[in-house]
Amino acid sequence: MNKIEIYTRDGCGFCFRAKKFLDKKQLTYQEYNIWDDEAHYHAMLKRSNGARTVPQIFVNDTHIGGCDEMLTLDSQGRFDALLNVG
Image 1 (spheres, rainbow, N blue to C red):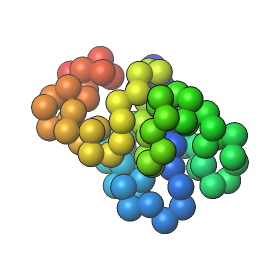
Image 2: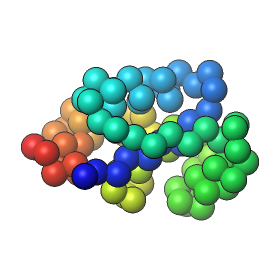
Image 3: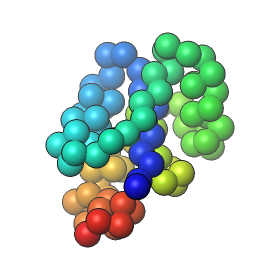
Image 4: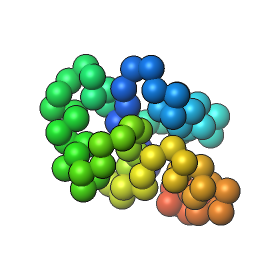
């Protein structure tokens, strides 16, 4: 089973778009809202090598970046390969 994690914040259009994409693909993910818990923000910074923008997305503990990077991987056929499903 794949492990997908996404760091988000309230009111973020890119976060909404990323979650909508994952939902459309019927993928389960763990969401960490950095506004709900400051510890999530610090964990995101550490795991993403200092990236401060949201969303920050991890697939099987591999940092893939934000929404645009995830959608680019998908358009290149590389996102499903990360999931071992295509």
